[in-house]
Length: 191
Image (cartoon, rainbow, N blue to C red; front, side, top):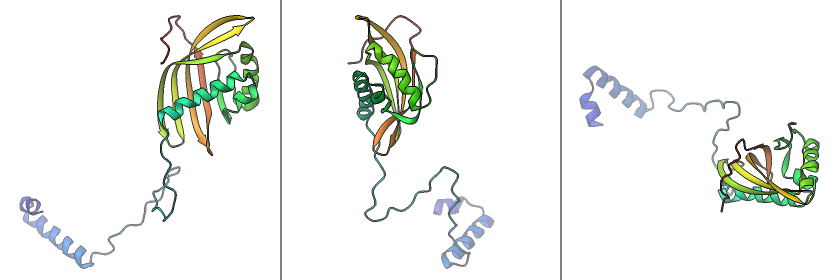
């Protein structure tokens, strides 16, 4: 404080000293301000009540990676309803082998009713997980499907994006985009 005062011009110094004295004496009017009005969609922090539950912790990347395994296990049931259970009711699916954007459960079930005829098994080739907050995460990368049609196996490599939201206690897909790889060279499988 002494250095600040020593470098301050005398008139400014006097003003600062008077303001400081008034603030210390309580003569400068109220020293607190009313809290700012919240912006739409922004919650103001609040003091935690004793015994209150602390804010949720962020999920781990491993937890988010496991959501693909749950989806893949649903595929293995060959039941389109079970696969659709992995999606939120208002999820959007941009599927690999259909031009139709699916925006509700009935359309998602319809897509998987046809896709599951090929007995797909998915394998992640490359994954990049981004944790957005305690209830939202994105997993994007590439995957390979092994398909069996008329007893013949084939593979399809595709790019994917899964956007997950924790709804209640369950992580569900709210957006799933999958598109076939434009080039024929395939990346090595993830270990």
